[in-house]
Length: 297
Image (cartoon, rainbow, N blue to C red; front, side):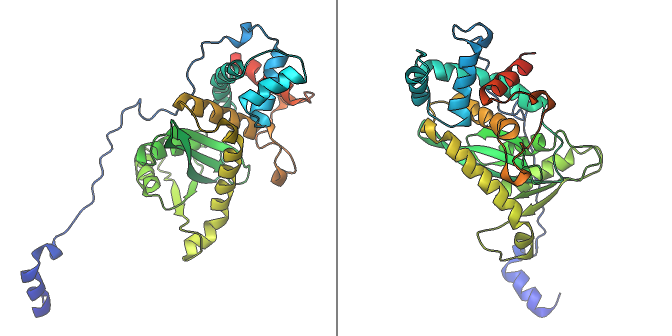
């Protein structure tokens, strides 16, 4: 230690103290579960209306993002079908429970690069968040998770689900913004990796490319931002949510529509996750009913 360093040490000994960062994750198994819609009280196989009406409700309310009140109005004025907007909500909330199971069962292998972000929604007048991760090439939504914060726990849950169906030797790379929750979540995920195949992570900071990493991965961040805008346009008719279950239900239905029913221009107007059992089914309401019939089993 030279004379200058000795003087500095005498003035501020703590400046030379070694510091170690230690992070302890105290999460229970229940906390690490993916958000999902509540089990419905309505049995969709025994409703008073026909299954075709149920398909029309899902087509108008979800695929065409029309509000529950306007959906009921369309059914009454155009099809002479009398039902209330609350019935529309009851049916769609019940359908979301089965659609979540369908989304989990038929989710495809993720791409090597997964773009992720969180977007805020209003629940009972307060900001809550939906975490999305999507495959960069297939354009499919690999995970969706509802939380009331943007901290490490929801980031862990969404990232774990995003790579759940990955192959053991697949090298996954996450691309996110600068939210430190993603970095902390990745440490947790890699600590549990039993294949010695750590997941990589890249950050895109700000709106301008001020560093090489942001410049290289900016296009992936733009993908997830476009998804967030599409999601916001589909939930606009809800005018916010009165409960977390309502937010989870509509988000689940949006993912079903986005992955399995919505043609994507960048995929030559094919859906992100094509399924063979839709062959020969040409109407959107019939496809919704096929999804439910597959989920019931």
